[in-house]
Image 1 (cartoon, helix red, strand yellow):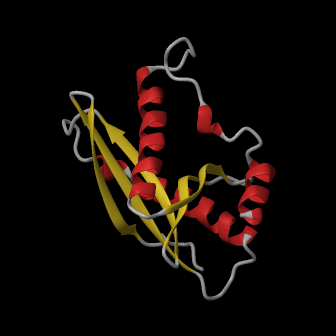
Image 2 (image 1 turned 90 degrees about the horizontal axis):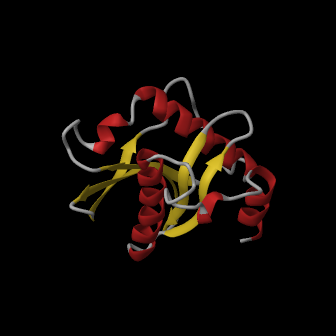
Length: 153
C-alpha cells in the first residue's frame, strides 16, 4: 500500500474522492453524473472482488485513468462511462481510439512508477453504467481494448 500512497501523494495531492455533488458546487449535471458514476463503479468493482488502488490518476505528462485496481494477479486500468439512456449508443462506444490512447498514457505512467516490471499482467476494462429512472445498471467489459498503437510495453 505504501507505493500506492506515494503515487497518490506525488501526482494528485487532492485526490478527488470526496468531491462535492452538483448541489451548490457549480458543476453541471453531466459532470455530476460522471463523478457519481466513478464513485459507484469503484463500489461495484469492490463488490466484485476487485481491489481498488486509486481513483482519478492523472499522469504528469498527460494521460488519465479513472480507476486503477487489481483483479487477482492482474493490474486493471478502468475507464468508467455513465449515461442516462442508450439513446446515443452504449457508453463503451464513446471510448474512442483517442480516448484509449489517453488511458494508455496514464497506464504506462503508472507502470513506469512501478519500475516497469517485466512480469506484470495488466488489462484495460470499461465499466458501463446506465441510469434509468435513477437506478444504475452496471456492465463490466473485461479486456475492452488492447494497448493501442504506437504504445508498447
